Image (tube, rainbow, N blue to C red; front, side):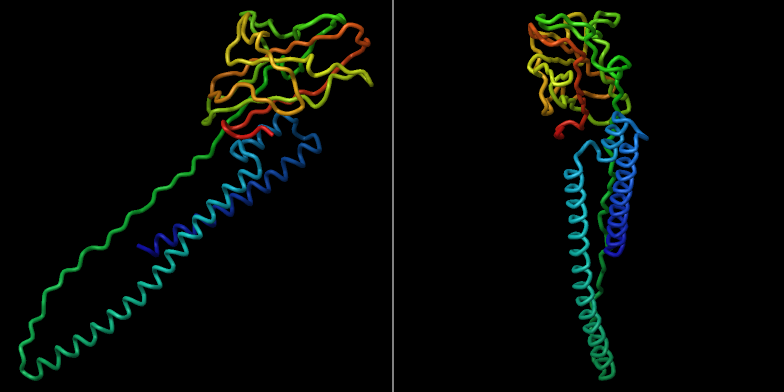
Length: 281
């Protein structure tokens, strides 16, 4: 039984190493494809998240090392136990040979030797059943969100101007959303960040004037401006533990100071989806 356990664990270790090699190779390909514009950012993030089970590279690597260490330690213990058992069996065999020799001598001397009837219990072992179910999720952006966050023409000195798609779906809800695939098997956390202030040449609108809110449902009043959050250059959590089949709806508002220089202002907002409990940074 010990031999079968050792063989199983050695095979598991080989599969674990093969999986690591596969993930490294696919990440290398994905990074190259993204740098050469073969895949866009949305699909890059989605495929990277699937490869790493929604984790960061460091977190995935730490989990892999912990699993490998566990298997190696178990193998070491089994090999040690097998070596100890071999020594014990050798000692028992020597004792058995000596006992047979003594009984033969007793028979030759005409002595009656009582040989006890010995029963041997059947050998039994438990087997570990193991299945590693890979975490999977997929997220898709709505068409209006994929087109960008548009504010159209805004008059300087006005506050909380709506993004063009804030209220334009059938229920007067937002048409900017991220849909979590029905076949996702882990809950998702969403977060977002901007790369910089909204800029037009050297002119800028502070991020404090660019606010947002999110919800897993939408209508004329949800998400609401009343609890909106200012955009920052660090990732900030939106909704968490969003399950398959649900969507993350977003609204954005922009205030333009009086006297703001005319121009077309823009920046880049990154929306990120990670497995529940994982860091967005």
